[in-house]
Image (cartoon, rainbow, N blue to C red; front, top):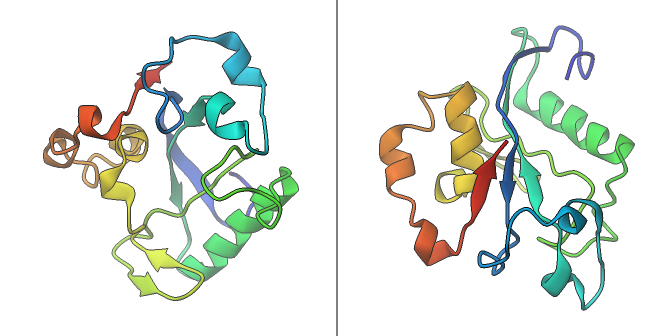
Length: 157
């Protein structure tokens, strides 16, 4: 994360958490081929790779705005090979970087919503986030998640 914007510094990062694709919670883990193979098209739902999830906390100087950070993160995604126009929504992708929060800032624009509107519903967000921002991903929020109801299978490495 160093160098995405002047003065932005990596302050903390979580471990990597692996999550089964939606509806695939009964799939055995680990399946090494799931870590390498990315399938697109109609077969993608049946053979999607496990997702690798992590959270980072960044320290930003006062002149960095949420919008500037978001645009820098989207540019980083593109640089790493993501093409949002060509991919299926919620399907396999090379990388997915979300700006979950920016201090206490709130936004509701067509391009950026802060805090992220679904972050408190997702174990794959809250468990890594707990490691870098325990004040945000509190035990009460995590205890409210229903892993059984959502079909979530998640492992840390």
